[in-house]
Length: 188
Image (cartoon, rainbow, N blue to C red):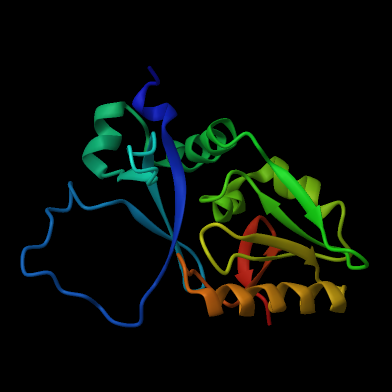
């Protein structure tokens, strides 16, 4: 059986423009950890449990209490989750669009957006594109990439985002992100 810290994976979420107030809010120690990532995206973490009997994927939110109990430093959490993602979802595949320097990346269907944290992977993709690395993560299970100087590639990423948003499943952001100095920033 895996240790709990081996199950931690990154899960991206989208900020909503409304502040929701719960009648019975969770104590701070029991509320899911949440940190800003870029623009309207935030990062949270979950324990990646095996699918339920009906095939549904299950994530248990990681809380400050859980981090303390596991003996992790908060600064270690991002690196641990990123490393675990590639171990827990080893079927990484790159699917380059024909005639365009743009790619869709899959890692098993539900946590592709978490690749935004995988530095070695990002460096590899950045070496393959023209200009700065630009990505689209319109949904939790979609990761597309191209270069900032590739107008056709940028158009393809926007096209994918439009298609994903029409479908409406685990939506994150229609905006593209550019990688600068180790950080993600909204493009344009």
